[in-house]
Length: 269
Image 1 (cartoon, rainbow, N blue to C red):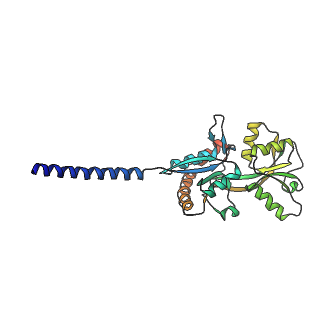
Image 2 (image 1 turned 90 degrees about the vertical axis):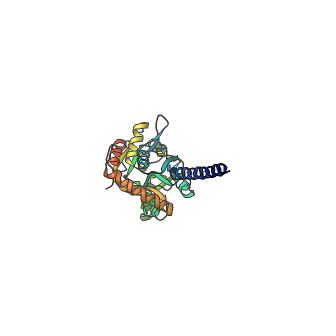
Image 3 (image 1 turned 60 degrees about the horizontal axis):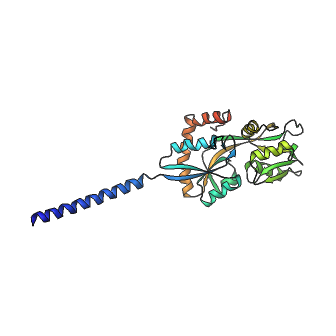
């Protein structure tokens, strides 16, 4: 009888021990789970975010995100390529948590979103058909047909110009065509000019052999940053990622990526 009681007691102790161990194992698994964050970007904006000849998404912004992922424990970052006009909608709806798409910091966007520490400087330049000599400045665009993408910083620059001048620039809005399509419109003469980034323009000219060129001097220089929702989740992500971007500046990673993809140093201090 004593042996039976001892046996039952041992079985009970063993069962409790196994349950405790199982509970610990479950807690450890939960604590090491990796959370996925989705990053909105375009796939037709070389050399920042585009699909290469092997059908892989690559570019400066893509590699910046991959470097951030290496230093952001507990998170996996996955890209969600989309057309320009869909990127902000995806962030607003919660389908993505970050935008990495050469987004310029401006007061209008700061009212609605949170920006990270700037990681790139982008210039705004005027692009015309090769050989054209009558356009050198924004004033020369008055009365001309100029391509514009709804909601981007280059279009906002032109809209602000129109708001301050009696003679307007004729903005030809497009919500579907990517930068390469618009540059082809410039080359064919369907529009007189386009305002965008010189790095993207040079990369597209090289890739497609377009007969367009940059004229005049840069119209404006903008800080480029990642974008987050303006809420507690966005603030938490911003706090972590800001520190990583500062590290990437300090150790030269951003400089090297800029030289690799743009052949220049466009990193803000």
